[in-house]
Image 1: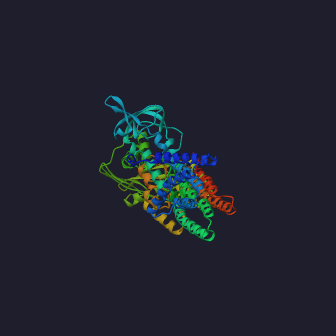
Image 2 (image 1 turned 180 degrees about the vertical axis):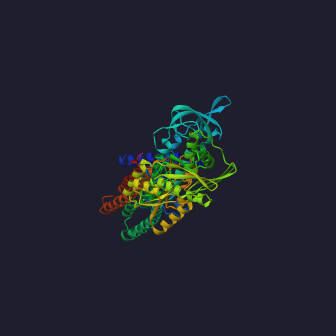
Image 3 (image 1 turned 90 degrees about the vertical axis):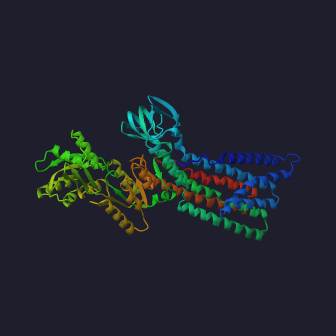
Length: 624
């Protein structure tokens, strides 16, 4: 995380000075209103002139950056008040402006607290093993490799791997899911998560500033600083609005010569509410999404979510659990099952593919020792070639084996086609020119996948496309179960990239989204307009690769994110409507003589609250 310790924090100074200003102005105006005998008018003038200083400072800061700010309108309104010797109006205007600054500081602090809320879950003290004993040290003194003990009821202070013990861990601070997960030796645990029961001894892999928690906070902070297209439009609108207001006020003054009338107009039409509430809505939405385990990289991404028309997804590990289940082992040439599995274990020993992991677990479960090959070469999406006991072994798709000289007999092809026609997948194994056998497996479809597709279509998505390296029968079976519109099969990683480029060319102007794991699919995800990475907890690569990183494998978070984008867009539109209506009503009240400068300042201050409070509603009903 960025080190902000050396940066001065003027929040409390600004807050206390504005509170003091409000108290002084309130007392002076009260004394004036109560008509205290001999109350000097010049006191109001002095207090009003002092109170205008922060307004002028903010105005000049904006001008120095070549920006026209709402403070410029306020400064001109106050100058009009001074010229008209309307000291009570000037004091009341300053009271409203100081109160507005307090409210603005409060909203900034509240937003920062939403973004930083996870920090409170990070323990400040850690029990670290020193020799045979455990010593309590500060979180910032923990180093990679330190052995940490986490007891029942404590939060895990670092990212690490369990080396002893078993515990039930609540990861809701990172994933938004409160259901506890059992962690045992070899499992990874993450900073800020809660140990509900059991004791763990953990080896530190990432210290506090580099943990998953720290990365989440940093990304959300950065996202809140990135302006969306809507925010950029609001900024441009505000600049032109100020110019138009100043120009219009000058014309009104030239036509009427009525200082108080022009002053009242200026006070009513100050657009500080719209300038504050729109960025606030995006920041609040991004922060609340993070609380639910959804990392949205920027306001621009949040804006694109409701516009998604096409979803492209991988099959394995996304729509399915990515944990293939071995259902049959078929051998040829009188090869024994044990012999086939021994060769297959050697072939898959160094691969991290989900199918390879499933095969290795199955081989070990059969009591067969896995021996590493002397050479290993893996072609993603095709197969593996290894050297084992001076023999060339090929494992993977039939086409891969054929290209490497393995001969497939007609009778073997019929058996394999029969297996695949039932929606099963196969991995073939060949040695030299012989096909020794195949291992047959299936991957369970996620129950939430069908709901995901149905919900996104209700939210405006028109097309779902599944890209897979699997055979057509398996892919079509999954597509029928999930109501997927289009399927592309037997694809290599580079084929998926070409397909995404093709569909983007065909659907110009429409938002295309892709779902993947953020690691194997990083290149394809980068091509999509909006990319979702599944199960990103603990994976910096997955978090960095996608526009939206889902900290767990809950597919329901995708339509939740789209709904949040829709809700944010709706609230932004509402705020523009509120601003327009309140301004129009205020101008009518000034024109018919109901509002004088003091009344106009009060009206503007009160109506400022409406869009700002509305902006803070974003995500209040966010599903968790």
